[in-house]
Length: 470
Image (tube, rainbow, N blue to C red):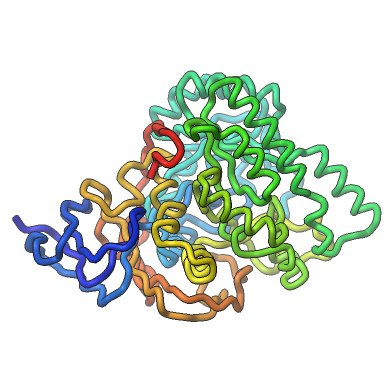
């Protein structure tokens, strides 16, 4: 038996820890893992020369080619590839008109729209993707006709539906209850952005009246209790209806505690934080101004510590990026309330989180792989992603854990021309990224043609008890 590729000479980083082993790849799939001397003969051998090899990162929360992001699939997934991210899940917006939010004359949202149409629109745009991608259907209006699309969404490989409780696309608790009942009947997943809209709006207007436009005044306008209040309402509804619930971009101890209160065995509820909430504090607003603005805001040092505490104990499962690409010019405004939300992070996420989690806080590589690879894949119905095992896609990252360097926006593959991590020194660099056995990026840049990435139709995920999805 001869295979396409063997990967040898390194240390595998898995959920179970570090392992001195290699693996064989045939037709894009891992077909053997073990002693390099016992692997089948191969047409090509990749000797990683003592580096780590870990599963490709699965980022289930990115914004590419949407109302809030200037990245195309080509530029966004180029950033992903260079950062060791081999699968992303983007958003398909129900009523989006196709116009970007920045500089739009009026709302970018129509009164009604189809989730299936939004899915097809995103797939048409994705022809230049370098890495594999999936989609979340995103409800942006209280239109019960979308419930009639849920069966077709699942058939199309999109078993996750996102809702907001804030902004002009937020929906009421009454609508959420109805939607959760429909999703529960299908065992599909509700994905929630939770902030109390009324509280945030009142606090924003208070600061506007007082002329408090400095970015350091921003976190108080979207406080941790507003995040926790809305999350508590949403998980109560999910619990009552039996709906699978995934909370995105958890930023505070208060919100994570509300999620912990309902997790019990962990079979119904999941949650994520983002790299920036695990590595930055609200001090960034004094240092970088509105360039660091996102929603929810960066919090205090205790909240950063809480993200790791809740990742360790299993209340939070995933570390994502919530990647949004904007230009420095767009983000630089006189008053923070005029600034668009979102920061880019796809390319820097793995090195930054690795440096903080492993080098600074002493967590294991098993911890890192669970949070960034295995659990995102299992949580979102991607059984062939996020692991180095027989039968999995040969998505992997060659990583030098000892190389130190300074992050700079000059290296961005994204259209974003700044970085919230600008000047941050990290130890640990992605040296090459492979998707289905093909090298898609190395230190020279992207190495495949646009369109190598494929749409990944996802199964309705099976969520076991806490700790059972790794």
